[in-house]
Length: 404
Image (tube, rainbow, N blue to C red):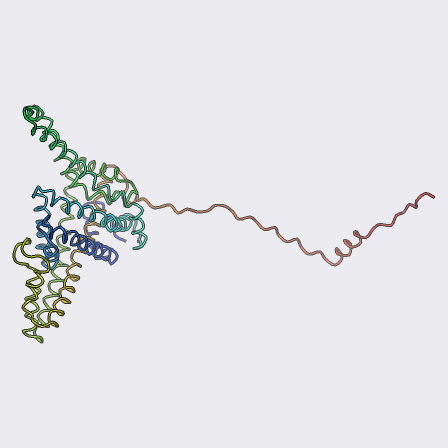
């Protein structure tokens, strides 16, 4: 059992928990389904030119080094948000809702395992953790959604104020209402920033306390605002341990791939060099997304191979590399889920005074109805007793004769 110190040093638990097979498996499935969902949404909308990013861009991000791939994905997201076009917002909204549904199950299961193990030393099975997250699905789903809904609400109010200014002679109304607009803008920033910072506490709230989305949201805001310095210390400790964890795993994976490429290239020669160039071309696609779709990127990468067998070998190699690279992301997700659980339990102790080991456990329904007792068999009478019973059953002789 992990020895708790109940301070920032307990983030070391998340470091070792990131290598737990159950959590890595859950995170791997979550990342894989997330990639498939994102690419499935981007494909038709990129063909319709609603959004510039396409599946090739997302897929290539996972073939690159982890830090570079994360920056690429973040750039895709920020570019879509900053575009200001409803055409980009439509696929983006579908992606966000889908990802939130996926991680409501996967993230809930990971934080449930971490909360029970860190607080009580109790091992939770893979199936049990998934069942718990499915039972609390809507709480997990609406918890992180609440700050986003709040931000969108106040954005809509400001937009309506601006819409009034479109009417002739009503520009002055917008000018006089500007203090209200400033207040709404403050709420946009407050709800968005504090909610974004504290969103990592929402899943562990539901996993550790069995609460609902409203309680998860209120605790997230309360803990961040009540103990901002302590929260920052815990986050800094988690970031330090997480950076070391991801760096070690990413370095090990890159070393594994490099060793495989070098040793196989020693025997295969120029053929393998061509395969490696094709893989690199697919991992670093050239041109703009509008001009180079997914199929075109594949043709550019594999066009120089010539042989169909080399194309098949390259496709298989890309598939295996994709799966190996996904392990780095899975370990990172497993660490984040475990660190969030530790962070929440420590913040709960600092703010509310609740002991760390106080974690919600589901009650097992027990039937306390006692079964009906069977009557005990009467002892079998002895031979003498049987004889007496037979004599009693015989009709007694009448002593009196009837009157004549």
